Image 1 (cartoon, helix red, strand yellow):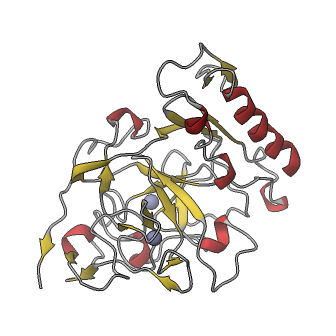
Image 2 (cartoon, helix red, strand yellow):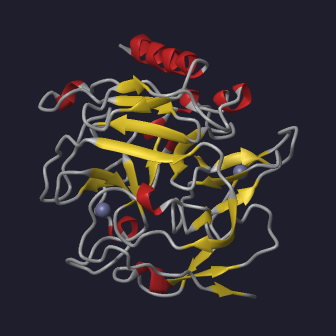
Length: 304
Ligand SMILES: [Zn+2]
Ligand SMILES: [Zn+2]
């Protein structure tokens, strides 16, 4: 099973040399479309990040659900991730909603660009995906029962820091390396464990401190708690700028020692993204939303 999934990835990359590989939304199957026009160079093809996505397989405890599905293809300018929302580890129910199979097709830019100004992440719904194709939400719950409280702080997540919403859609509010990768030494620099919808990679908490990677450090959030985040988590945290290079920007990212911008998942709020540093196509922001769709909150900045 694992090698078969890998082969799909290799085949997809090979097909890209001939033309743009798209995805038929009706069937979910990868299909060949017209050859790419503009940006379809060999160099761009090499950027299709299929190798950052793990092989997925069914956990024996999840026999009630179909096996996890995860397929990655690239068009000339987008990465397309299709999946069925079933985790590859045992599902533990921590909310009233049972796990349900989903039909996801996520798209984000292959060539991300930093925007002049950061953009607030949506208050509800997916803001990014983990490398297993499951959605990542922001660091707040919905409007009920404790409006917009921090689900990590409140302790309503499973051992992998996820849970199901009302449609049975399993999602994360924070990321644990051990749930998304295997075989990474605890002291090593973390691999990519997710992708933001602005196209920038999300690494685990540890990263190289210098270009030659002679030192690995844990990157930390610059957001500090200013109140009880049981409700209205965003209002109970402030971003505090720091001269410490291990402290990330307000979006929870930085331009690393290799010169590329990326995010890090952190142990503290906002856990994954604090905002988007790059441009996000609004159509990338997931399917349906709750009644608060479109409501956004701009993070505040305090200078020490
Ligand atoms: Zn949630
Ligand atoms: Zn980094």
